[in-house]
Image (tube, rainbow, N blue to C red; front, top):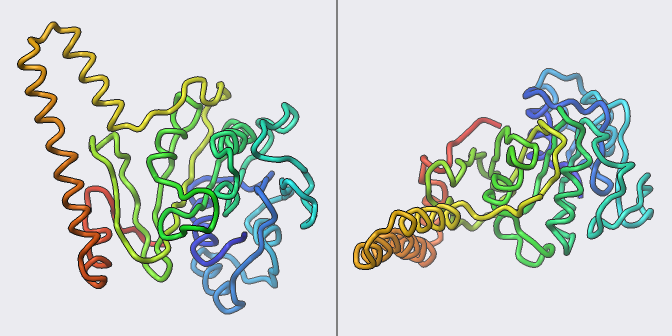
Amino acid sequence: MGFDSNGARFLLSARERGASFERTLTLGHQDLHLAPEERARILADYGLADAPLTDGPGFLRHLGADDVAALDVSDYEGARILHDLNEPVGEEHKARYSAVIDAGTLEHVFNYAVGLKNAMEMVAVGGHLITINPANNFLGHGFHQASPELFFRALSPANGYEIGRVVLAEEGGGWYQVTDPASVRSRVQIVNERPTFVMVQARRTADVPVFAEWPQQSDYAMIWADHAGERTAGQSPLVHGLRQRLRHIGPVWRTLRALKTTVAAPGERRRRSFQNRTHFRPVDR
């Protein structure tokens, strides 16, 4: 676990976008995976002086952290807080930190929903949750690979959060800001070859119960809502059946297009990965 070039730049950009690292909690101990010349270049890009940083906590202190604590299930790397994220955290840890950072931990937590809920609850109101997780082509790395949809639905006003941005970063490639699937009423999917991370910055806006109601995938939620509205309106069974059949044409068509992309030549598949500019907008690092 730790901050590579993408992770370091995302943290620096989060700082520019209002995140405070004054009181930071990291999930697991974070190393710093930057060569000295790369570190100097990245810090210079964001207007910070270089420093002989050797680990993640040192990097975070360079970003303005007065205190950096790590939470882990074991103390083998010197974690200050010992806790299994599969289990709910105690009240003493909730709403305490200006930033909670997950840079490669939650994908290793079997009970992902509880782990994410813990992370969300430990952020103070006005603070930020920052996550950097495997999204694509990390099969076997951990228990999970995360979809942008997961974060759009979980980090919602109902759970006391607002999304700052969701970005996909390909190893050796660019950054792409992801559109909320609910806003385009469609699944936002890619097929690509390179390892890809999903990076999220979200601000806690209210101390409300997290997951009082479980999030639902947006496209299904819209179908269910439309279906309920049609039935309530007393629509005839014939018209209702026809509408249901027409509704399924779109998902079938998207599935066929995804299959075509999957069997395309590798070079073509790479070029097509982020071709949908409605769903993925290239952004500067």
